[in-house]
Length: 100
Picture (cartoon, rainbow, N blue to C red):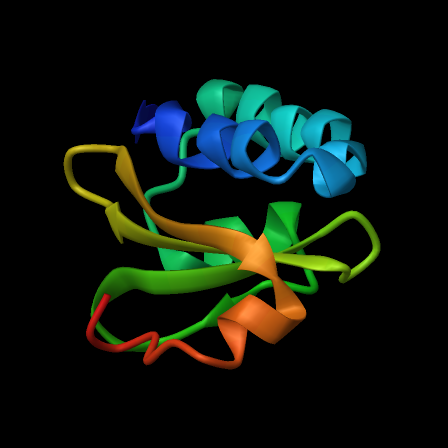
């Protein structure tokens, strides 16, 4: 998969030093996703059973034992993952996943 943009994820722990423990689990997700070949939501669920599949290609991943949330939009035909949001559960609760 092609991932756009890892900088969204990196900026989270760079801007929030108290959340540096998110770095390694987030990078583990990134390395896994780079090697993946997701052509459908079921393929994502196969790799990440705890992910939540939403409408129109949106997927929510639980990172670091569900301490953080990663929201992406996946263009399955082109194998592109667009990172929309990465943050804590508290931050996630303040966003509208369908509009980010």
